[in-house]
Length: 145
Image (cartoon, rainbow, N blue to C red; front, top):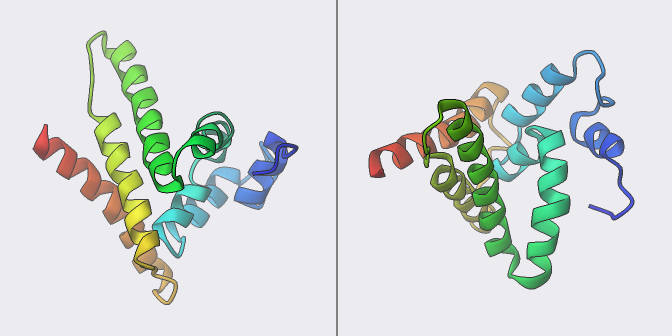
């Protein structure tokens, strides 16, 4: 991400639609779930959150750490923010999303490193592949905690 890329331009690049445009949620879901890889899924998922994670977490971490580690840590930070939000809503400590998101970060690194893609799959199978990795991460995390 360029230093001059604004949130508006970032969202348009990720969604194909301007920030707040009609149909932007549908475009985000279609692009992310139908993505040809798990990494691409995350590039299209929630572009507003992704913008801030990229700018304030990923970029600083990758300046000091190997990229693969920065990716996993960025996912862990995102999970910690989700844990904090749920903890505040429930008024009790929740620690599920941090390890789950770190596991998904490992999934991004692993599928990318191994060149795993579903580019040749029909869209319905892409939805299942991306969704399956997410659901599988949650189930694995829950079973280990």
